[in-house]
Length: 145
Image (cartoon, rainbow, N blue to C red; front, side, top):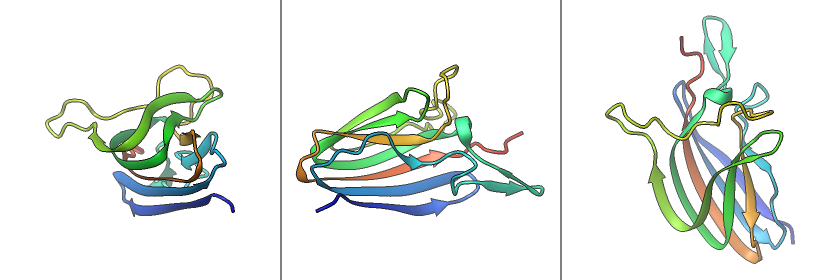
């Protein structure tokens, strides 16, 4: 058996992207697998005035809904050496965007070598038939003057 993985883009608008990721594991770990490609090779570009802008390091995570059964996930910023964002285990939902102008979400750290804004997953203690579902909402912040 192989890992059964899926990625589904639920919304790809000019301001926000929402994607759903699932894995039913065969016991094989995912290590540094890019789930959100914020670079120009990814699908999240915004066309403005004849140019396409990509979120890159301007991306911010505003909400995470997740359920992990029998494993955990290290969400990481893609860089020369990946940087942990959060660890996900069990089930919960977190919102990082304050609609009243406060905290604007989790953003990539400044000054890290090779940081791209892309988001990678690394699974922890994945056993056969363990699983996860993650729904991730990000603000693109691309092409903002």
